[in-house]
Amino acid sequence: MREIVTLQLGNLSNYVATHFWNTQESYFTYSEDEKSLVDHNIHWRAGIGEDGSDTFLPRAVVYDLKGAFGPLRKVNPMYDVAPGQDVALASLWPGKPAVHKQNPLSSIDYQRDLDAGVKPGKLKASDIRYWSDYSRVYHHPKSLVQLYDFELNSSIMPFERFEMGTELFESLEKENEMVDRDWRPFVEECDQMQGVQVYTTLDDAWGGFASSYLEALRDEHPKTCIWVWGLQSPVATIAREKRRLRLANTAMSLNQACAQASMVVPLGLPDSRIPSGIAVDSSSAWNVSALLATATETASLQSRLRLDGSSQHLGMADMAQCLNVSGRQTLANMRMAVGPQAELDSDEPPELDLSQIGSSKDGVKTGSSSNRAFGRL
Image (cartoon, rainbow, N blue to C red; front, side, top):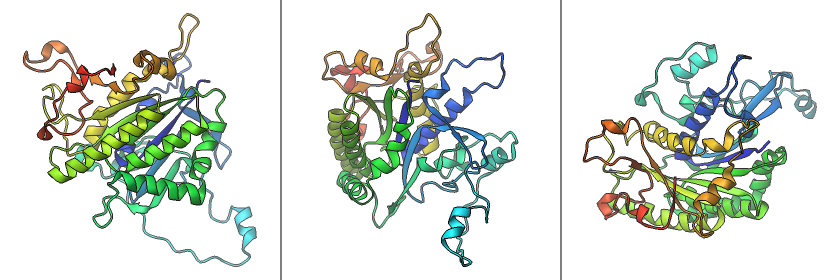
């Protein structure tokens, strides 16, 4: 079925991937007369819920830190067991268990409307606290992996250095065989996996975590196409020392990712020369991730189109091969045009260059990467 399994590493990655999954959900058709152009079996997996009903959920493994999932429950209603109905659990302990519960975070109105089957209102940037606030899809309980070693936005022990990510991966892999536990079940249920799609940040500790994870994946799948969307957080308002740290993290992450992946596409919001037709709030992860997700979804659309009798499938490996013309160029430049080009002012760039690494404050020139030997999306 040409399946693609998605690996999501880190908070910004999950913001971007949530937009991606919402878009995939929007492609579903519910009329017998309407046929979707997208083959949903590529990114979605069929299953059976706790009540015996059919489920259709993302082929994804989602990692984030403690506190990053917000009000999202690990076990969604499709797989929830009603109190007193778990016979296997009850047989382990004849006594009455004592239950201690922490008050859950409240959902925003948008999620409550979705749960009630009511058309939700329009979201604003100020409504969003977590990436789960605007998610329109359920995930399988095995998809969601919360890492309790670090806490989101911690001021005491921030998860911000490349080495911290590699050390965390090595620790979890040694203690829990994490890749076998989390990743392998989704791969084993594929008939003919065409590739792996990875969303990860490059400029913090998740870059180190991703580097180690990619090495493990390459050992497991030596001939499989691994496509990496390497994300960078906006840096315009960050202090100079922090920008330097992020730039060092990005350099190490790119070096390791390019050695293991079939194609790496660095993505970040440029801090200058954004076309006037694009309105984006760089302080809103929801806003920034929507723009980056638009680029990733559009660029990879060909890999999930439904085949008809006359068309030939262009998969992830074919796309990577088209970009990697010499066999050694595994780094691609991403540019995107939004809206009618005729509406742009004459002095504005015709395309938005999303491949800027670092900040223009540190001497980085937007678009300079296009002068190098990269493939271009």
